[in-house]
Image 1 (cartoon, helix red, strand yellow):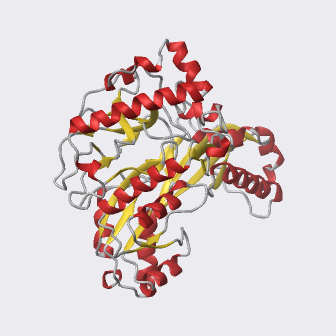
Image 2 (cartoon, one colour):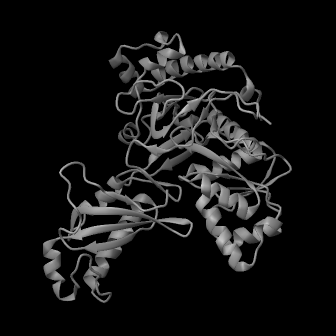
Image 3 (cartoon, one colour):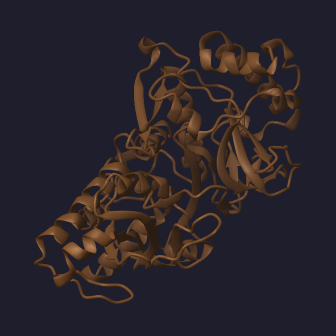
Length: 447
């Protein structure tokens, strides 16, 4: 059942809402944001030029690099007094991307997540155990706001504490979970060791997202827990989780909250808008946002759009599950990681070269990162007596200089990307060279 009547309105009614929102947004950013005003003036575009939805093509794209370059608040269109909540994502140089919300923005975010919860079948009769992380990451509070808006009880436990998670599911009568899918698999593994049969608990549904996952993983979670699992999509730059969501009726494509976030699919190379059903890069324009409205934000996610009415009754456009990205970003345990972040750390360190390889693996249910880094010739000479040479070598644990090198790299990389990595030091020349774009990532996760 739809949470809002706007989820079931006709296409013509939706387009009228979208055009009004687009016109309002373009006028708003032109008046209140110097960056966008300069961009629009440079293209010779005035707010009055937006007379139809097709005129969105006149507007400039916004990229993650634009957000980095204007850190922290230059892309905010609201005044500091109007901002009531801040969030942030990781950045390539240790600086995060800042996100600001006005009270109106929080209302829209809560509404989007209420629709998400309702789509998964969550009502005021439910107890939601919110395992998404709280803090600067938008997942925790986004899910929290939505669950409260539909009247559910919320257990704000956040991530980790696996055994306590299981205890609360048992003791508090949890009926719904919000989590990354990999952590739910991990919870089940620990529960099995504890002798817990999750199918005998009160659990009935879960909302999962924040990382890539397969249909087979969904089926596995549903079978292990005896629940329905719905996908969710979002990104902090647009609002956080709740940009789109699956319904439990079909579990096939994600309904976009398109009265708040206007979607397009473009050719990632040419930037041309593609027709409905075509696969390409997903682009969003926020059309009811005040703190940090964005024009034509390039997500780099590859998807497609379908305008067919869903059997659940929603007329909202559906986006296909994201099949990949048009850039090199990785999503590890819900955290966005760029190889360039790791490279920036390596380049600052003495004794190692700029040749490295990021290896992504899945151990059990959890993704992990290992970074192979070449040491310099000078470092090899310094530690020659203690290094076992080969295609790849291990350093004797009692060699303090080498142990310190690995520790410092691990520490600095974690400071930048927010998650722990393994470090493997290898001899000069060990990592393959390329005449073209260097291959920096080896993703060994099962497809």
